[in-house]
Image 1 (cartoon, one colour):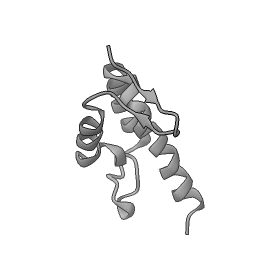
Image 2 (image 1 turned 45 degrees about the horizontal axis):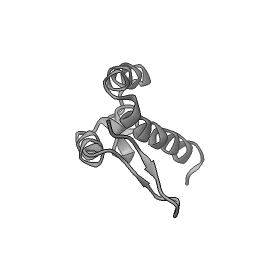
Image 3 (image 1 turned 120 degrees about the horizontal axis):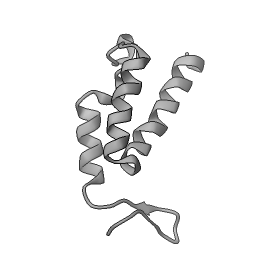
Image 4 (image 1 turned 60 degrees about the vertical axis):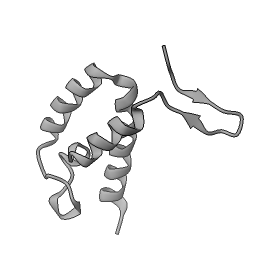
Length: 82
């Protein structure tokens, strides 16, 4: 069994394969399902994003927490950015 490890300097090492899996998720366009098209997203209804997220979280909740943090950043930038 392998997990995330927090080091004394504050850095964290993720399990083997997490970086590659996250890169594939991002490169496949899954991060921007509900993001506006003008910002590089797909502009789909948030319900689609939620349904896809349920499948992904069911497969690996630990991995999907990373894009979940990014969704919050996307929402903040869209709402408050200029």
